[in-house]
Length: 438
Image 1 (cartoon, helix red, strand yellow):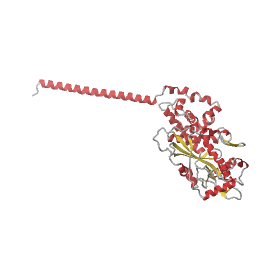
Image 2 (cartoon, rainbow, N blue to C red; image 1 turned 90 degrees about the horizontal axis):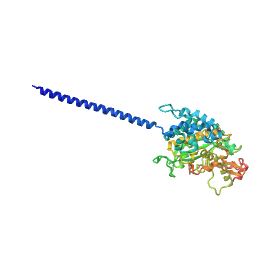
Image 3 (cartoon, rainbow, N blue to C red; image 1 turned 30 degrees about the vertical axis):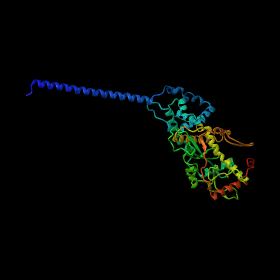
Image 4 (cartoon, rainbow, N blue to C red; image 1 turned 180 degrees about the vertical axis):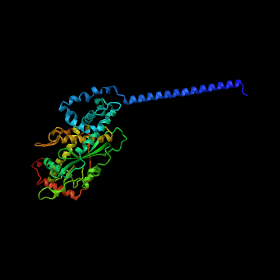
């Protein structure tokens, strides 16, 4: 039988055990509460770091360029054009076009306005300033600046591409281009001038080797065809620089479309009343392969006949349209004055936006020559060739010539076509002043 002392001892033990259980439970509860408080502190700290605004950026609404200076510059057309490469009216028109794509919904903070987003992007392209510089001008964090510029460039491309750079042309479109080349550059049956450029990139990530070319530079490729008025009709952007120059045009979508006769070109027609039918052609320099749709100069500078020298001059005169078009891009959009400090994706967005902006502004300015002043482009004056002002800014630019983008294996048909054009320029198609330049 259990004695009184045993029950007293058992009760005491039970009391001690229960106290220990309560103490352990209390400690667990305190530990859980402590962990929750710590989690709250960590979340609060992370939230503050994520949305913290540096002291200098807190003055954005009163001290950044857009809010402090933009309203004043907008009142002076010449200053506004100099700063943004367009009029205030054109800026507003462009803003209305792309606003739906760059508008942000309010979240924790009030979003940066679409007007400021466009202003910053256009200024970045026009000035050639770094993204760090834009960050301090607009008092916006560097990462946000980078994202805004990429998003806005993409919106410009998506909005303007079909309007100013259609994916295909009709036969009537080609005939109109041919008419302009004949009227402005005295070259019949020319429907475009073609050239290819490497666009140098200073990649932030040195491990990106996909755009590393044979000259030990990072680059993407810009293939362009323009009309007689310095407007791009077709571009192919982004063939990585590691591809040899010899395969760029051949493997491009544009090159394949011309080769397979999928470009809706007009049928060959006689240039003269009693002449043979000749195709409508592009004009390019020595880097391109001679074909039945692309004329290039006769090779060599020595031992050429007078007829061939004149042909080369007439072709060069028409081909200078694309040379000047690329020159205008570098002269106006100074981001192209030096290698672009961006990764491949952002660089492609930037180039796409510049091409669309150039065409959009040039189409509104063909007669007035405000966007592209006459002094900026090459002229054939009474005293000879007058180089355009763009030629002063090409040495260190991001745009570099290719070495070769076609083979020398031209067909007999292609050579015959060039001979027919040569005969035309030295007979019925001759102009009096051509002998002054040859």
